Every structure is written in C-alpha cells, then in structure tokens.
Length: 195
Image 1 (cartoon, rainbow, N blue to C red):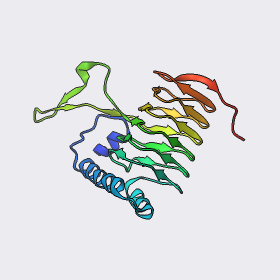
Image 2 (image 1 turned 90 degrees about the horizontal axis):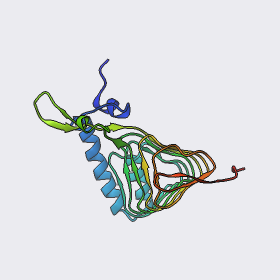
Image 3 (image 1 turned 90 degrees about the vertical axis):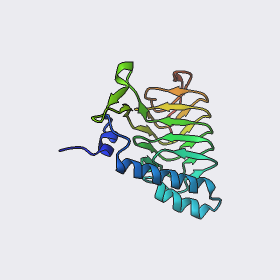
C-alpha cells in the first residue's frame, strides 16, 4: 500500500512538502494562526483553537503571539498555559499533558535533517532539487514547567513533574520528577514525585 505524503511525514520518512494535501493543511494553519493572534475575544479564541489544533483540553491559555506550521498536529491537555512568542514546528505530532506551562520564546522543532551533508538534498524526477526532512514527534507529560527560551528537539519525550530551566536545549528524553538545564539539557536535580 502506498503511503500519502502526510502519512510519510508522520512516519518520519522523506516526504514531499509540495503535496496538495500538505499545502492545504499549511494554508489552513497559517490562516487560523493569524486569526488566533488577532483575536482578543476569549470565546472566539476557543473556537479558533478547536479548529486549529488536533485536541484542546479545558482552560487552554495562549497568552500572546503564537506560531505553528500546521496546527492540526498539536494536542493540548487541561489547564495548559502557552506564553508569548512560542513556535511549534509541528511537522509531526506535538502532544502536551495536563497543567503544562510554557514560558516565552520557547521552540518545539519536530523536523530534522541527515548528519551526512550529501543526504540533505534530493532530486525529483523532473530534475528539481528538494530539502530532505525527517520528522519525529514531541511529547510533554503532566505538571511540566518549561522555562523561557527553551528549545525542544524532534523525538524528545519530557516526563511528568518536570522543570526545564530557561535557555535549555532538550535533545534527549527527560525522566519524570526532575529538573533539567543546560546545552544540551541534563538532569540537575531530582524532584519528589507528586502525590
């Protein structure tokens, strides 16, 4: 069975971003993100969020300017709070648990490229070149506080009851009940499990 370009994208395979289905998703995402950023009415923001995102829990707060590529690949839990100037490069699934706080200027990047520079560009049958991108999902557990100017890289799972210190670059999974910080982020303290 042949996979659609969208299925390839979600499976982490090389995909053609020019595919009409993906282009329609991108266009819809841009329009809804623009409307979300322009709206000041809380009820309207909820309606737009329901159209933009895959799933939203109750009491989602997006406080300030927000950016996403598709939107439809993002799922939020209950009581999530996203501060201003956050960027979701959701070329794969980004899934948040409940009570996640994201400080300003944080970035989530699902896309990545080959380490081998000779494998970063491909040639289509018509001779045109294209950038080869692979994607992996990002998941964030419950009761997580992500500090300002953090970068979370493709394929990362952040556990439950976690604090990610400001400025960290998270390149590997974060265990439950921990504080991580640095570039790359490492565990700097263990936290007592929540009751």
